[in-house]
Image 1 (cartoon, rainbow, N blue to C red):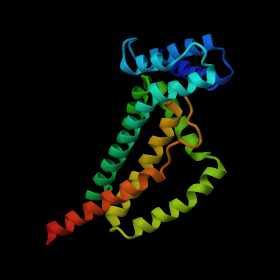
Image 2: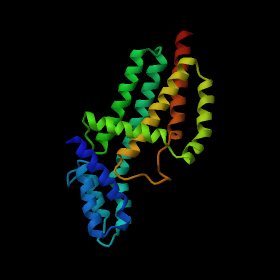
Image 3: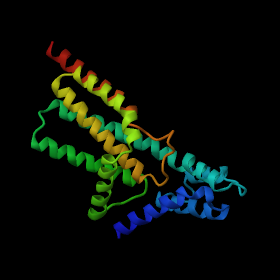
Image 4: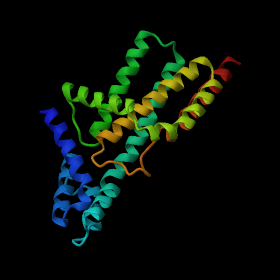
Length: 228
């Protein structure tokens, strides 16, 4: 049943992506589908704001923009906070203890938990099989990222290595694991968000890298202060 929900989610993504070519009536029907998937009542403030802004003459492209602004943008902000918080907490956890097998298992569990929370945020409830399928999609998306994207991030990855090199070994290890969690979370967000991000608004690891660096530096300063 949950695998069917995942397939319905994928079909809805395709329908939302094709909204610019849809008629006004089809666009409104698709908007209502999105509302139901997100678990919003008809009197929910975000849905009411969309209805207040939506006019009968709006075409599919305008409806798509209104849905992104009123229904998805608040969830995008919450997803951003969730990814930043959980990747930062994981980085601190790794930095404060040697990376043993138990720690590695805990890191893996937190990464799966992050994906689950992102799914629920965008209206998906996953069972075991659906979770495995989505996780494989996330890993495949990470492994086969476009060459242009990898090239654009190469400079920032080099910067992160330089930043990590200025930390202690444990803090640098924590930052590396935190960056992995952030990258995993952002890839999962792209796949679970019902409407694909525009290229200009798509969240990137670079947005979270400085936050992780600052968190690791604060942790190191706190430890240095405690020792003195």
